[in-house]
Image (cartoon, rainbow, N blue to C red; front, top):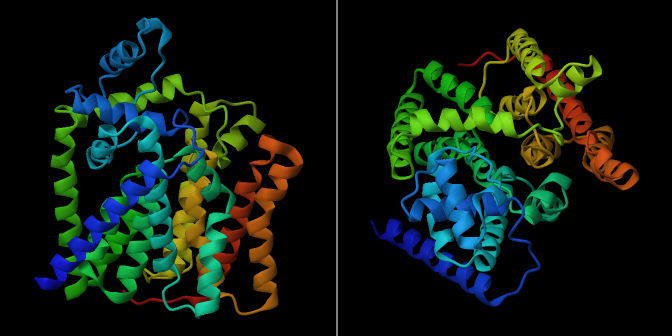
Length: 382
């Protein structure tokens, strides 16, 4: 009881400190980049507007700006409703303070993710990893524009830490956070939950039940943002696909489709083929443990088969990258890691925005290395 009270006190004091920093420390951030989508959605919920009511959200923004509705364009909110519910306090702040608060929260989540991912490393390597994480290109970009990847990145780090130390509560929390970015997180959630069921031991059963309970809590929490969210959320996702043409997407299926002069709809079928191929490769490896190696593979899978993938989504590549760093044992390993880390920066420097597909090349390289290790180990230990 005393320990829980202490942890809660530390958590509350940390939030107050971050809020003070956000209010009094000027950081040159533009609140009208990606962050505004979350801020406007949260503001609408506080005013009683259902999260996925795009027309009402548009009217609210038009009223705030003093312009007509036809001058306002609002994308459908593409995230699950509990994302908005858990971030509602941001909308109580002015947008300039809120974007700084969100920035510092993201910094803290990134630091916690690195701390969890590097658990057990030697101190010097661990210290360098904190610095390197901020300069991993998609991480750097996501921080600047106020993107939403960091809760799920922290979730994946919690999952790995909890699996190593058999911490049921942390695992359930990590699984819940991974749902905040479902099109990436589900590729970790589904296999990890399946492994928990297959373990047939006390930890597996308790962790599986805790995960189900967490899912139920999030499900009912969603009704606070939108009373019809199981229906309207799906409608918002389909609407999002119609209004967002994915002109800046960096994805393997879309790249293949465009090479064949096909469109986004056809890339979904290509994604299905890639998914089947990667699952077959994983099963063929006969690796049956849920650990850093397998989770690194699942994250790479998500980044290789998603048709709708933006630059910032590659922030999740930090998980397999840190797996490679933690397991590096030769100069050749470090040469590969250095090439994977710096290639996106080289592409951006030489080609500008046109160089971002180098992110995909880096993930392909990591996937090939991880697959090689999966086939070398042939571990069967459910």
